[in-house]
Length: 168
Length: 198
Ligand code: SF4
Image (cartoon, rainbow over all chains, first blue to last red; front, side):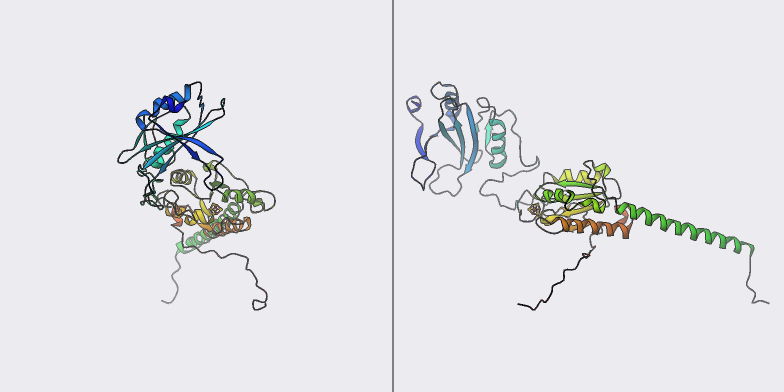
């Protein structure tokens, strides 16, 4: 049914467990960013889909990943409570300014999740009402969960005001 | 008769003055000792517990270890009422301004304990977001080692603060200087019996 509605989108069974027998295959949809809002709104409102809940919204940095074509994959995990089915939606973005449309207008809970992905991966969500950093501090420049970011940072943790007994 | 000591009328007066100065000096010492003694036995800690070390800090406050034996049971969550900052746990860079503000809000004289490996050196969290030792940004008096330190170790740290209070008195931390070179030996020595046995 989904395939009939959106023939250009790549639907594939997505094994959750690769080593055990493939009993937990779930549908996975690869949606280009331009069509994301349209597809998501359909998934949320259509009577046959009814994905009321956005379980998770996260991101993967595919830098140096074998056979990867795009760098950032924003991943949505959807659950329909009434129908009892699940769906993964993946949306890919690329450097230099990765952008994905925001789904806050469809699921309100996406607000903080998108802020986290922006903070950690630097993927901009266009149309987000309040895209600020959520975990790191405001003056922080980098996006630390990117694969090319060094674990110890680039000196941000030393760059701070010092309080001595004399100045306090 | 040139050997006679010149006894001037002012000499007697200055001797009295000397005696009274000496007396007030003794009174000062006595007063300072009393103040130090009472202050060291009623430290009011400010618990800045950010991680697992905080649990151990709570255990130290609970009945089994009972920090009240050292007069430090009055944990206050307003820095204005405290004179001992116990920094227990790792401090993220985002938390550092909060910790510094708390330190600056505490009234003089004040002391700081850095509790645990994380607060003292960053511990295993050698990452971009964790302060590698609060002493980089704050003056610390006593470091309590361990991950987490056992309550006994923290009590030893509190006792070290008590010794500092006794020795250095109620001078403000500006007068005390940086004071970080202080080495305090533990009071309890571990005796190893028969180190050559087995
Ligand atoms: S020193 Fe150990 S117990 Fe204390 S905060 Fe760090 S990891 Fe936790």
